[in-house]
Image 1 (cartoon, rainbow, N blue to C red):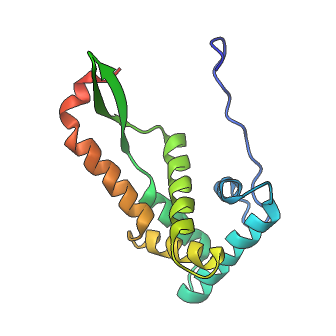
Image 2: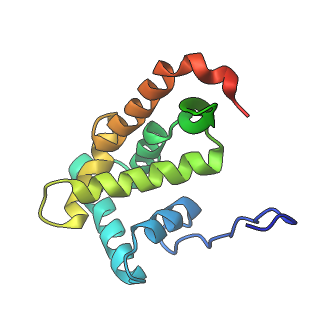
Length: 156
């Protein structure tokens, strides 16, 4: 990491179907081995499945799911005097979004199901209803932060 300049965030182009940059970021996170076409097919197929099942606009459901997953606080380890403390800190907006996207991908992959398309659509729908593994992960992070609230004065 350079000491002279702060790393500038790379801008991604909006996706071709919805013209949304968050969708592009999620497709890039979903991608394995550089197969972007496969990742796009999985994601757009999952949104089609959501539209068939709910009858609502799938992009709104995806955005609602992300807002339900985004954490406001997390814990960071800090070593003080030979002891390591878990200190609760607020999450920056860019990290908040990237954590939500990664958790959604990871918990969709770990679900039992037939195809990634089906697993992803199920995880998105459950996250939009404040259920599912990714929302549980956010709740676990909140519980850790709440339990270690006594160390919040040790922030740096």
